[in-house]
Image (tube, rainbow, N blue to C red; front, side):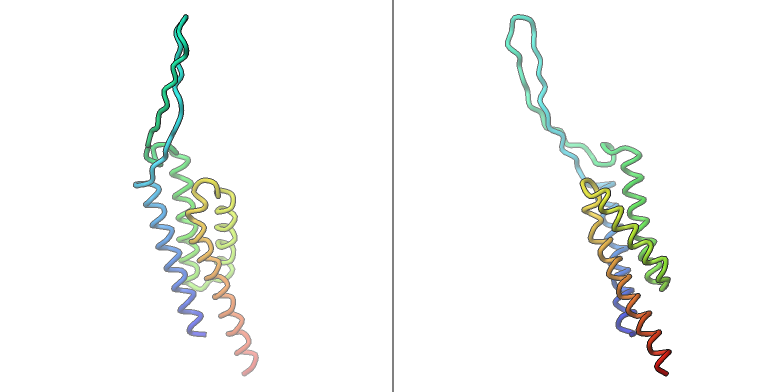
Length: 142
């Protein structure tokens, strides 16, 4: 049972570090690539097309709502890691489900980056649940 507690807390640490790292990456280092074609024409001349590629910081491109989404997702995972550390199984299960749902909903943008943290939090929930079941069965056996 002590091993399950250590594994639960280890997964909580992994979750918190992953969430903080991904948030820092998105807010300070991630680049968005914008590609397009500028087409211009003047009367009597064939149209001229000029392809372009632009690189922009994710935080500038996404704006306040994108920054808020990254911070909310990171805080959700960090709160889950905190509840895993504290041993609150009900809150942990709720936060694990919320993080998996949020990862699925935002899967085509930031969700995929946060998915390993959500999976680690879910594993932490399973380990905490197993520890709770073993502790309960040991009480009834004695």
